[in-house]
Amino acid sequence: MSHEVFEEHIASYATGALERPERQALEAHLLTGCQACHAALKESRKLAGLLPYSLPLQSAPPQLKTSLMGSLAQAAAPQPSIVPQASPTLESGGWVKHLLPPPPTWRTHPAFAALLLVLLAGTAFYALSVQYQASTAVEERQRIEEALHMESGRIQTLQGKIQEQEQLLTGMREEVNRGAGNLSELQDLLVRQEAEVAQLRAQVASREQETAGLRKALAQRDEMLAFLRSPHVKAVSLAGSAMAKSAGALLLYDPDTKKAFLYAFNMPALPAGKTYQLWAIVDKPVSAGIFSTDTGHKSRLIVRSMPAPTQLTKFAVSLEPEGGRPQPTGEIYLLGQL
Amino acid sequence: MDSSTRPASALSPDLLAQVAKGSQQAFEELYDQSSALLYTLALRILGDRDEATELLQEIYLEVWRKVARYDVGRGSPMAWLVTLARSRAIDRLRSRASKGYGTTDPIDDRLAAQLPNEGPSPLEDQQQTELRASVRKALAELPEGQQQALELAYFEGLSHTEIAERLRQPVGTIKTRIKLGMTKLKIALQSWAD
Image (cartoon, rainbow over all chains, first blue to last red; front, side, top):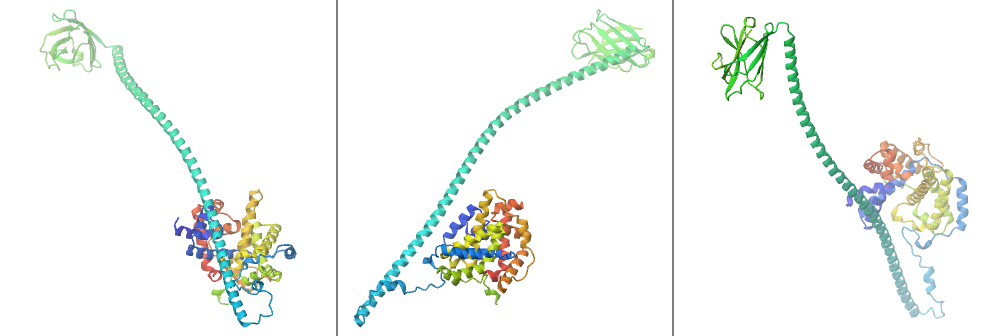
C-alpha cells in the first residue's frame, strides 16, 4: 500500500471508522516512523476530539464526584514512575542522599571533600547513564514487541483471508467443472435436436410436395367433374388408324365453355423428338394441343379453349415433331367424328 | 484572546503531573473541569444516564491509577481524556450490542445535538462557550451526508461498511464523506485544533 493510501485513511482512523485490516495496515505504517502520517494523525485526532463539544452539555450527577473521591482512598496511588512533565526536573535530593555515608568528624577536610565530590559525580553520571540505557532498551523492546504483535495479527488475518480465498477458489473450480459437464451435455442435446429438426423439415417439405401434388390432382378432378356435369357436353369416339390399330380415344367437349377432354389408350410409345398433336377439323385442321403417353401407353389432355366448338364435327391425332406444327405433317394415328 | 493560539481545553499538563504525584486536590480540579464533557459524550454514545455515570466512575479511577500513560506528545490532556472516554464507551456499546441489548436511537440524539445553543452554562467559561459555538457551527455547515457519516463513526463507533449499510450508500461514498467532512472541519476549526 502506498503512502498516499495511508494518508487517505488517517481521517477515518481518527474518527474510528476504519475497517480492521486497513487500521492494522495503517498502524504498521505508523510504526515505520512516517513523520507526515504521524503529523496528519495528530491533527485529525485533535479535530475528532473536538466533536464532543458539539453536544449540548450535560452535567454528571453530583453523587458521582462524592463516590469517586471516596474511592480514591481505596484505589492505588497513581504510578509515579512515569510522571508526565513537559520539562522533567530531576530532583537530585532523595536518592542521591542515600549514597552518602553519615558525616564523619573529618568531613571538613578540603582534600577529602574534593575527592568525595569527584567520586560522587562519577557514580551519579554512571548510574544515570545506565538508567537511561536501560529505559531506552526497555522502550525499544516494548516497541518491537508491539510491532511484532501487530504483525503477527496481520499475518493471521492474511492467512485467514488466504484460506477463505482458497476455499472460494475450490468452490468456483467445482462450479466451473459442473458447468462444463452440463455444457457438453447441452451441446450433445443441441446437436441431436438440430438433426431431428432437419429431419422434420425434410418430412415437412416432402409432405408439402405431396400436398401440392394432391391439390393439383384434386383441382383437376374438380375441373373434370364440373366439365362432366355440364348438360351440353358432347362425346366423340376416335379410332386407331393403320399406324395404331389397337389404339382408340374418347373426346368430350363442351361448346359453351370451349373446354375439351381427351382420353387416349394403347397409343404407341413416342419416338424421340416426336409428340402427338390433336387437331380440330372444321374446314381445315386447327391445332387443339400436343400430348405424350404415360408408361401404360395412355394419354390425357385437357383443352382449355377448343377452336370453333359449335361447328366441330371431326377430330384427328397425328405424330408431329416436338413442339407441334401449325398444320399436320406426320401420319394420322387417331380419327373420329360426331 | 488571539484566535490563532486558542487551546481547546483549559486542562493543563501540569495539573495532570500533580495528579500523577497523588494530589487529590489536583484530581478534584481535573474532575471539575472535564466531567461534564466526558459525561455528555458517554451519554451520547450509551444513551443511558446510569451507564454513563458508571462509565465515568471507571474512567476517572483509571485516570487516577494510570495517569502516567498520558503522553504529552499525542495531544492535550482533555483530548486524551476524550479519547479514553469515547473508546471505553464504544467498547461498552459493542459489548452491549453483542449481548443483544438495544442501542440508542441515533435520530433522537442527532436532534438533541442540533438543539439551538442554550447559551453559556455555569459549567464553562467564555472560552469553552466559544469553542462549543464554533464546533456546532462547523458541523452544521457540513452537508448532511458528511455530518451523518462523521457522527455515526465517532459517536456510534460504526465502521465504513456499517455506516454504508445504515445510510444505504456505497462504502466509497462514505469514505469520501468522512474525508471531506474532516477536511472542512479542519479549515473551520483551525484555530482550535492548532
